[in-house]
Each structure stands twice: as C-alpha cells, then as structure tokens.
Amino acid sequence: MLDRQAIRRGPSPVDTEQRHRRGIDSFGLEYVTMKINLVGSAVDSAFPGQQFAASYVINGCVAIDAGSIGFQSSVDTQRKIRDVFLSHGHMDHIASLPMFLDNVYQPGPDFIRIHALPETLDSLRKDLFNDRIWPDLVRISQEESPFIKLCPIQIGDTVAAGDLRVTAIALDHVVPTIGFIASDGSGSVAFVSDTAPLDAIWHILNGIPDLKALFLEAAFPTRMAWLALKAKHLTPTLFVQGCQKLQHRIPIIAVHIKPAFYDEILSEFATLKIPGLQIGSPDVRYEF
Image (cartoon, rainbow, N blue to C red):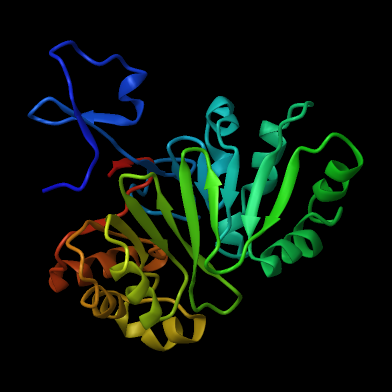
C-alpha cells in the first residue's frame, strides 16, 4: 500500500492548479505528489536521454545542482526557483549558475538562496564569482540590494525550502560533496551523485521510512572501474552492489551517465536486471 496522506474527494473534477502537486487514485483519493524535473542540458535532441550536466528541479521552486537550470528556455520557469542546493563545485554541477542568476535578477527585496558546504561556497567566491570568470555577484549583492545569499550547510543539516525540507548527507568524492534527501511530509526522495561506494549512504536511506525514490549515479562502465575509483564515481557493477543493500522497494533512477559511454552503460544495466531500475531521462517529470 502506498504511504501517502489521502482525503476523500467528491466526483467533481480537480482544476489544473490543484493538480499541480496532487494526484487522484482509482478510488477518488487525493494525495500530494513530489514533482521532479531532470533538467535537460543539450541544445538539440540528436542524442535523447543523454545528460551533459546535472540539475533537478523539485515542485518548480527548488533546484538540486545548477549544471543546467540556467539553460532552460523559459526565463519565467527559471524565476520560480528560489533555492539552489549544490552538491559540490565541479563544473557539471554549477555550469549554468552564473547565467541562471543573471536571467532571474530583478531589482527588489527578493534573493536566491544558494545552499552548499562552506568549501563549495568558498570555491564559488574564489574560482567563479571573481570578476575574471564572472562578475563578483557576491560582492555586488552585498553592496547593493541583495539578490543572492550564500547559505552554508553542514552534513546532517535540514533546510526548509518552499514546501520541502532538504537534508544534506555525506558522500565520498574527490572534493567535499553532499547528497540530498528532499521530503514534503508525505514522502522523501534521495539524490546521490558523484560518490565512491559508501556504506553509510545505505544505512541512511534504509532509515527513511517514507523513501519513495532514489536518483543514483553510474558514471563509468565496469571495464573502467579503475578510473571510477580514482575519480570517485560508480559503475553499473558498483551501482548494483549498493542497491543490494537498499531495503526499500522503490524506483531507482540511474543518472550522471557519461555520454561517451552511454550505450555501453545501458547495455550493462540491461544484463543486471536491477529491480525498480529506470534510466534517467532529461526533461521528463517524475512524480512520487
């Protein structure tokens, strides 16, 4: 039985706005859903399914990573995002952040909150917003009406954002990196990307009773396990070894698949027969 909060509905239809975050089951019960968009990062559709940068947008207003949120064709869609959570400072996770901030800027009291480890925020200041790579938006925001706010978070912290509570969990990558658990009161979804195998991840996930889905990386093919371990990523074999420790029967969406090895990795997954496995698809809205 689905773990969800439900109320009895009458026979009248639900309008479009109400359906934004609600579903109706076959018994006429209404339940809240979490809507997650895996944001596309390609300028054309010649290679459908392939993802060149990492971004997820939850319920239209909270972003996990900023690899491609600034490349969305609708600026109005971008302006709905008020909180950005960064796993770490590598380019495929922050590439569009400067453009995003430029696109959504409007003079006034509102500002974008960027949540990340102190090490990641320090890298943004020194390596990105430094007037050489991009204008120093942090300094400008401090001198004028603020339009961005850097919000340091630590492993284990939970932050309220929109109608979500987002918790940072430890990952094992070549720079300080965190994953995220997003919860809306009726369910939770985990985002685990850019990490070497780490038993603590599965201990945390198994302790979340309302976990509904997991987005998990698989960057390199198994034949390149030597490189995956040096770069601290997963292969399909390491992916399945981790999933075998997961006690929940939930959808597991494979993401962060390197485009150069996309077909090979998908072929590996086809032979592994992982229960609940889905291959992450850009610009598809997932509902949990």
